[in-house]
Image (cartoon, rainbow, N blue to C red):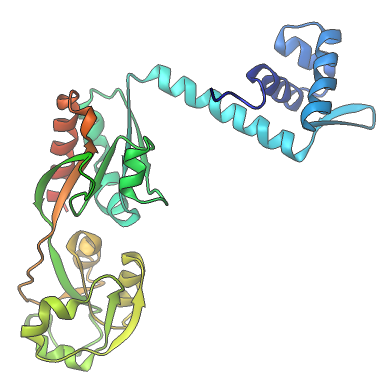
Length: 287
């Protein structure tokens, strides 16, 4: 059975010593005897090296300070869990969370009567692994999951746009066509080649100027006039409104859907699934 390497009571002793300048003050904060506390401090120092005596005073080592900080974070997290009857951990890509989900957080709170504790995650291990390992409760993504252990609901088609910086071509955006793209290099995501979706329209292979492994980099490059690209419209919605980017009027065929995922063995929580799906769909429609 897994257990704490350092007992919670010992962790609290570190916090008490960090807060108080004297052993007696730490004992008062912990509501214990100073003599008994000293013996515990000596044991912690010997067993874990989290305390050291310098200039006649017990002080936290660097590792002790880190454990004390973790202890205080754990106390706050526990308090948050107890104060809130609903804890939601929602994973997504960084750009989708920033552009779509986070701005709609108030609406999510309303659906749960203001009782939800919301945590947004962008897991390094990947969305499917994060969900199946229990790191998160839901995933909102622009594609369906591959693992059959994950249930999902498709919400609506993901919209895409062909964009460029307004100063890249000296003509009105209304008169732009794909033919004008010959003058400009392509900025592309390494896992998506826009030419595949636009080959009939383009009629040529575009010159690639930059390649990125993330859409945030693609967006930045296009805004800075380094080329044109094909991107999710939600990624550049604000940029289009503020005229940092312009959209080339062209029909784009992309077979991608905004979806909500959850572990299949959580099917009993249907009301919560329905609420998350409703919220995510409305959040995306508002973009």
